[in-house]
Length: 126
Image 1 (tube, rainbow, N blue to C red):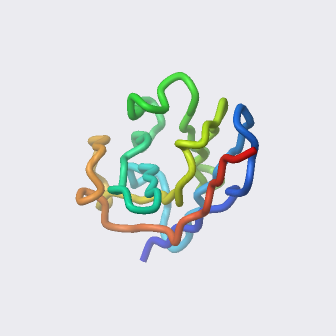
Image 2: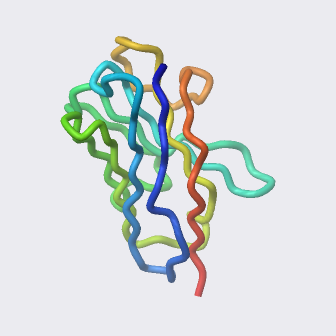
């Protein structure tokens, strides 16, 4: 059974950077499309980014394009989300999630993902 654990969240000033990690265990990560999602208080969950199984295809929400970069190291069973130029509106709990095994398409809807981590808090504030 695939398990995901996020890390790397924290408090950062506006304009700062953080790198989130999503570490997998219980299965080989390269069988899975991985997405990052976030949820701010009183807001709907938002798809942030997604990466294909081999890492050759990515997509981003318009709100983070040009600031966030998703990547993966299948040898380390880890997916990363590099977040630059952070703004207060990026404050949220960030989750990584995996689509069902062997599916290929990167999608932004959380309902398409079967496995979820527990989340890591990102707070952007001066």
